Length: 236
Image 1 (cartoon, rainbow, N blue to C red):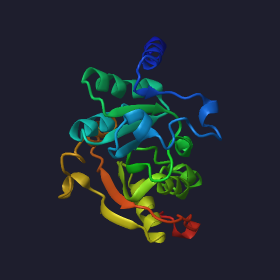
Image 2 (cartoon, one colour; image 1 turned 45 degrees about the vertical axis):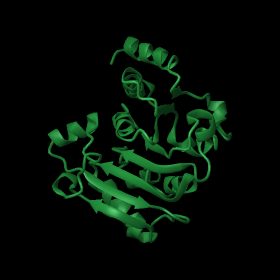
Image 3 (tube, helix red, strand yellow; image 1 turned 30 degrees about the horizontal axis):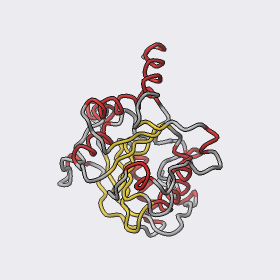
């Protein structure tokens, strides 16, 4: 994508009422104005709120919003030019139960309070393959503890990825911390659980499937504090 196209998309994002792009000062060591107020002040209803983290082009966010008009969906990504695609589609198709936040996931607790979120999707995140980078994984203890603090009791997290390393790391970490794994499969499309929701295919997923990569999936819950695994417990 050329620089002109990126600038055009950035400018168009500014005109979208359903795209939220806070200033750094609004979220760094600060609570964003909508924290604990999304249902009351933004959505103006009490429907469950579902997040997609690292939403990219927003395919999951938009398609889930279409399937579930009785839920509200928020896609979060730092890449404004990618996020634009989902925001544009939602506008063109008059999908009103979807919004996007342009921000780093590290600032998640600046946006949402305790028990504010019902469900979280993590779709094809950077697997951060090197062991020294495991703390950056979106299923590392640092992030899982964030999710636990904003999810409602019994809230569900979904991880869908082509990375067997991330899949094995996440299942091992959850087992180490005695967390609830509801579903886990290293071959989603060879299993019996690939329903119409799990079969939503993002731009990146289509590429991975074309390369013959298996798609993995975990559905789980987190409660209490999640601890780091000792190095000798990490999957090799």
